[in-house]
Length: 212
Image (cartoon, rainbow, N blue to C red; front, top):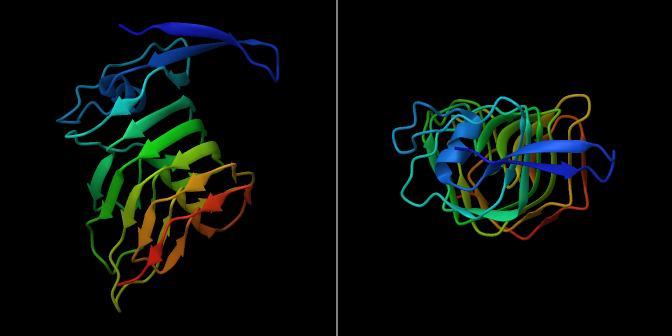
């Protein structure tokens, strides 16, 4: 069972209905990861497409299968910890491709690795591998790593602390902070690996950027 909450949007003064997320299973349900062997996803209500964390969520020991996301996730200033992903997909992250909104969310002890062909083109970030008109604000990566694979055969690999590759007519990232290590990409950045279009404002990177 899922609770829903109603809040007044301070910008529009209108009521908003949120699906509340307090467990790993509900978080998986937001992305409808029904094939996840480690998380039995619970489908959230269809009444609202906006989601809000109401507790810290620990993913330790759980397999996370990423999906695209076009809705609104409000982290409520809570923490998602121990996110672990090892993927051969061309797009890698908590979210694959973001076309919606992620805000007010913390990540701690993330471990994201690309396990595919090192000669392939790929995009990696903690929040999402790719943002296509997505909006990200007030997201903090407290600790962890985002690690690609690179060799003389690597074409293009985009790795960022928040987003790997950003494009579209109006994507933006603001008020974000990264402390995760970024490693082994052809295009790397503490916040974004590559900005094809869009804006990045009031963001800070304190994470190491390494090639070995």
